[in-house]
Image (cartoon, rainbow over all chains, first blue to last red; front, side):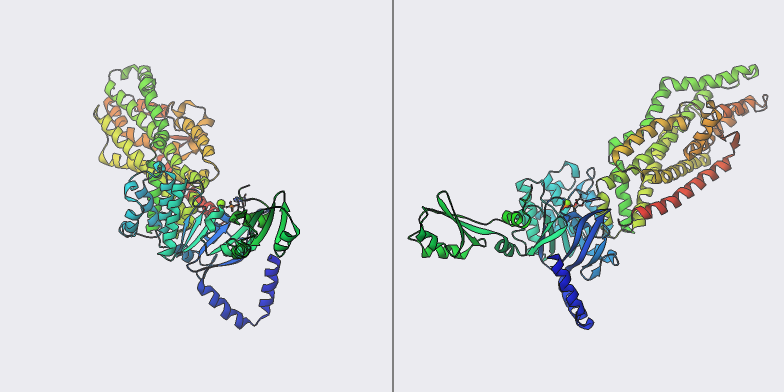
Length: 332
Length: 306
Ligand SMILES: Nc1ncnc2c1ncn2[C@@H]1O[C@H](COP(=O)(O)OP(=O)(O)O)[C@@H](O)[C@H]1O
Ligand SMILES: [Mg+2]
């Protein structure tokens, strides 16, 4: 896939320069992020291996991959923290490596690990962090007003950060990332290690930001179910992009819905499932149909209502996507 | 600028709000105080009385109160001298911890400039040290003043605060370079333990440096902190020694005061050479400057994107 990309680009290069320039400008204006052949080497170890992708403004973009896939490294490069070894990145039309200060004004990051100070109260943490962006106390108070009620900031306002629960901390982390009104919010595994309740709170939060604030969201995760609502998913494996699609697209490409039809085997029945990928095991047929909510299943069942009595439908899951892409189960 | 001051403030309160860390950074000073109350005072007083007994004409000319006061002020220089080492170092371990926990990433992704990050750590260390040592000095002077006359003018006291400031900024500058070598907070913590134990000896809080061999004295005095303590001693005890000299009335031609100065190290000895006050101030200033330049060079490399 990478090889093909390169070849394609070479072909494009052959086009007239003028043409290319026009095209590039058009692309970038719509893109929050444009990443080309981004690479990161830690000495001899390659953590990110020449990845290219684009994120549109207002998009909910998800980066899916196991531990060590290179998600954090990518985010840290995009956020001007780590130096890229190779490649070009544009963040809202600003070039990474040349216009870092402009980029820093436009981004917010929720880091994988906690970066706020445990001994400091929530208030002190937010006030000092706001000052990093040149904000006065008054401006910060003004910015935090909408969060006070909505995200129950009031009750933890004077408590020290280390005394908060995991979920409360995450909430403060996110508010911290929003202090400078970023145009794009990076969230590096924001729900890892949280209890289901807290996870839901974080989730509602992200939901609010993308729906009401129209913020571009860049999420990394190793939970398959979290990318379901994304507009655009990239699956990263060992520093390489192995898939780049919508969640539905991924499911259609890499999962099947299985119909288990419990019946004896016969030639007549074989004929019935002939046009599908199928097999027979012990006491049932396994009929594979492409996609998750496969329409052909319902069609197939309604047409053969009389013949098929005892059956079970197993939907393709996002977990299968990862399994089919990498040959490994997520989290193994 | 607000980013810079915000970050500096953060670095200060991260240290000061951690009560345990503050107490630990003052542990050597606390030990010096406890030992003083237990027996150090006795050894100081004995040393003075030995000098007095060597010259019979001096008997009765120096009051017991003044000797007491002398010992008390020596204690203050010991407490401040070690705190001016341990406080800046402990405050600067925030740098190690921030790097270990990747808290610095949070700063690096903001518009705060790289040189501002470095300088904010430095200023936070220097400020914390000036603040804590200033408080210690103030409290100490008030407590001791209640027990007798210090023979200190307002100008002397102001200059003492000045020396505390000089000691704080120079020690912080030296440690800025040192902390860069620590990758983990457990390593810097272990070093802090050694530093705490050593600091009291190096600046002569337990035993006056003059009791050591010339070589050891030279090693001790290479550290600006020892020379700062000597400056403090001169400033804080100068008035009292002058008063003692007056009480004697010149019959010993100043012998008593000069032997006391010799015993309690009022001059920094580098090999066999005694440094004048002016030379000590110059030495400290030069070390400060070199450290600041080294700090700028090393850190700008270190905080560049990797
Ligand atoms: N500072 C570093 N030095 C060397 N290797 C690193 C460093 N940081 C990360 N790596 C390696 O790079 C790879 C990607 O790590 P990371 O980006 O943290 O993955 P993820 O966030 O997807 O779990 C891993 O193999 C990791 O061991
Ligand atoms: Mg990670």
